[in-house]
Image 1 (cartoon, rainbow, N blue to C red):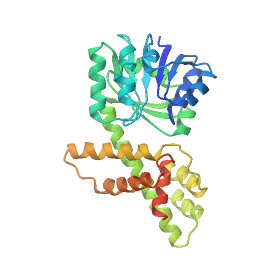
Image 2 (tube, rainbow, N blue to C red):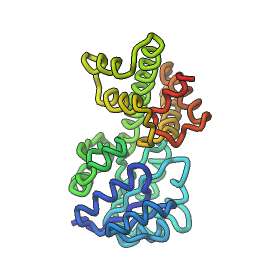
Image 3 (spheres, helix red, strand yellow):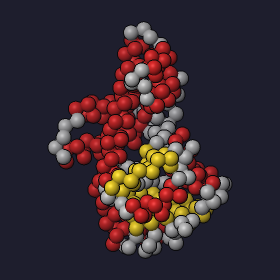
Image 4 (cartoon, rainbow, N blue to C red):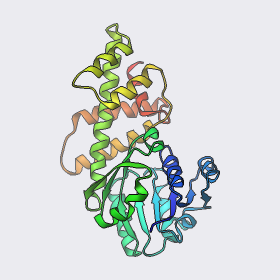
Length: 288
């Protein structure tokens, strides 16, 4: 039975995913370069690790959820990284969103060290994570997914097996593309409607009533209406994920003209200093 868990990466969603594991009475050791979420989880019963190597040593399962451009490589491959401490036979679960190359490199290193590996990017916001409603896309041995299913159920509502290692990463590219474009469409619709003289609440009432209704439009539309751009899914990460999408499309000789425009909007929002805000803050680019 998988009970001893190391958790590396306590960002916007990771801290809530880890907290939910404590509700399942898992023995949890956590690490993050930010001490604030670590201390919060220690107060709930977790044990703090001084580095990723310690967090990975002697565990049944090690979960890492780190953004590609920040702490991923040192937390994995550094002298105090996961691979310096993880034992053969441990299950390593990558729940971040990375380039396909990073995912496959991780899988190859795990195999070299006789560590079992799951490609398992998560999809959802802070509220999804807090309420155990994340979607988990899995790539790898399906029997390994089965072994982890109970653990995953504490923070994931939907656990979808996509295929081999790398397939879940590819599917996450698709998810990220559609999600970013939907937000851009909502932002443009709201700003266009405002220019035509309608208030946001009336626009949302109409959008919610017909064929374009969606949970994203409903929830994000109302936070935009309140002027609430508290980080739920960081805009800077959505921009990074779009860059990965564009890179993946280029490799299969596919042009994504709408994605190019949307990516430029998120890039401008980052340049404007909106990167740490929720990705709905892309509307501010249009409201200038």
